Length: 124
Image (cartoon, rainbow, N blue to C red; front, side, top):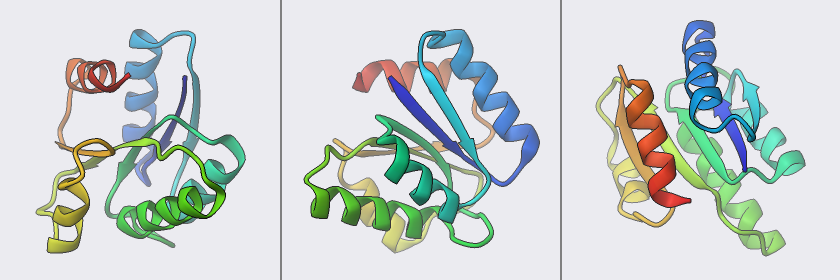
């Protein structure tokens, strides 16, 4: 399994990677710091799972998700399962994404190891 973590906070990236290493030690885990890097990394890596923050510099998580959806549609790729992580209230646009339960879910920060691992296991 290939997992992509996109978050602008170093401590969060490190924590998420540690959680994922505990639950999915044989997985490939890539880490980026903003939405633009997330789109680029997805193009290169075709990840199965995205763990993405909404509020990031350069390009936010919502815009990154839309671009990744577009890439999947244009290139006939399987859409990854996206776990949106945020401590903020989500916009109406994000709520529309979250209505697609086969590809999106929301975890509110702070999240713990068990929440992330259980969420991924439920969709893989």
